[in-house]
Image 1 (cartoon, rainbow, N blue to C red):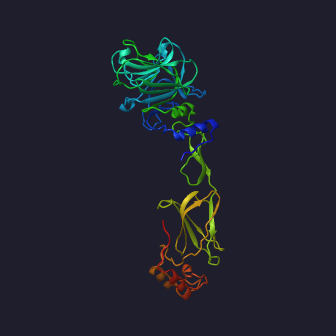
Image 2: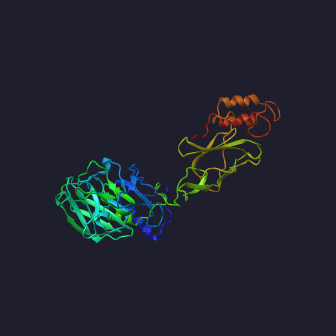
Length: 430
């Protein structure tokens, strides 16, 4: 999972607000971070069709916002019904106006068709330079009878970045937030309900005069988001104060915790190439097998499974040392069902066992001997194996070291007794 990097005190406060706010991804139709392209990272795939120029964002980062020249540049939405929702809806973004003429202040329309008053828009009041939002009812006219609008008390400021959040709830309930603060304003128009045209929405232009081509925005826009619901005040506060992601396509920042999928790494974080990478783990596993300090070399295998499953993560085989100890220098870090099987004995399971990034020790006690054919069970087949070497001494052709349970160099009645004690048992398994 992706974690959180260290934030400033201010951002921590906003994160606390987020916990009580509705999920900002709820109802999010599209999100264009505008980091080198107009790709939608909302998960809906509503990528923009770009006819605009990349430029610096508000932090001076190159190619992290789009500039519109006021003449013929724009970014179109895909023409999808999902992007033409009924009210309420919310649109937010960062904006920098270059020029004051009203013809250069037509910012967007969510259903742009020339000579048809449709869709939701942001423009300005021509005479005053105040923000003006609203919607059309689908009539082929631009007048009081075909529009509902809300004009802010704030005048647009030129050549500086500002954050706008626009909330369209009804004909008499619209809000304009400039840098997190509600601007206040005045309602106007007598138009009917919101209607959309068959045309797609467009960032960077809006038509508002019959018989005259659309007006084009001159300035820059960044981090454009569009919801099919009204954001709460708490959510608006979070959106306008949030910093951009270092890796917008992944919605993560450099240094964020992550999981690179490699069980042999630890401290996985997002690096400056927007990749999740960790450092090699130094976890090892070792231990001792009780009562096997004099039994010579025997293989021991260790298997790691995802807890409660049969999904094998890693498996190792080593040789028991003369003192009865074993060691595996590199093992995966995490919580696993660990199964250890000594050659000639039943497998022992250690469930939900945590392997830490250090030296780990698992000693084997109460080992059950008798699995001479390696099927993790003691049965008649193992009796047959022991009988084949019964009476033999170490060094003789038919001597079987696994059948010599007490390690005295002779397969005899004592070993039969060991086998009899474990007969019918089976070992642990995933």
